Length: 435
Image (cartoon, rainbow, N blue to C red; front, side):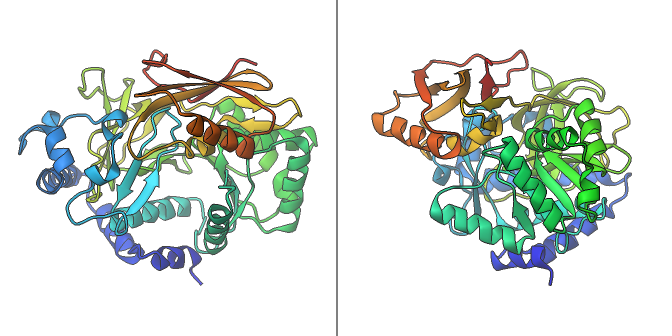
């Protein structure tokens, strides 16, 4: 049974058509690839100019003749009601609806048409096959969070079962939890690990302290995929040593899908099939390969919602060896998260706060930005930019989410600001710790 394909088909995502289109794109020669990208960029801009009132107003005119005329889209531009941003013929019931993690501190709700979403998954499946991982057959050890409300939890666990994923919740990464994780590897036939970099790294350090090689415990293990946070070279070496399998870097974002994936030659290959990825300077001009700049992404197939020249909030460098068909990400800057250590010894990755932010994201866009800082082991501060102060009801909602996902008896202070302090690159770090 092809479980991965079945799970998409049950949700009416046309995965067969998406896989066929992906194969056709991959057959385009290097010489003709510039024509393919130019045509798809023109098509998606013209589609949204003709079918999306929000984008037409954002663009400011009815047509364009040069790609550099296309405005760069910031996250803040998308912080308004989703209904205002949907293209003609699409609704919340006919498109895939998701929420960004808010890891940049600027959350919003987005939509993808079902074909575009299926094409993203076809890309993931293609990349995983580079490392002999078959999403239809390979069992995944998933180091992620999970909704803790009853219905959200049940829904996610059903999806995990159908998608051959077994969840290792990251809300508590204490020694006791790591022992339980190890026992699951001893009993189950996992093919690969997939998870947040900081959580997978903590598990690797736990194994190192016990002088264990994970592949000797779980012989079917082939690979570890880390995502969402920056992977440092020394950490990668540690993980590969204690796991006994290769560790590869995945770079993606829920709103655009797979951005880059590492191949067996340790090249971080950028997705040039359903995305157009640019590196721009502060004036929105493309930089030469080998030069650092802002990562700006165009989703070439998403007709439900414009993601055109979208500034994702990261900075990076494309290799000088890059071509339009095979761009290579040489460096990704940012995307690191601290770890919170609580008074009872519980260890919580900073990305856990994604599950807190989900509880306060509102479709009306009133919450513009937020950051969370751990001041002491039991006290945190939330700074936010909003049109008005949080109501007592909103504060209670956040406190309940923190108690559910992080820990109990924690002090939380709220401070509304006109703007938040950013790094030199202009990026907000959602979670930091003073400890």
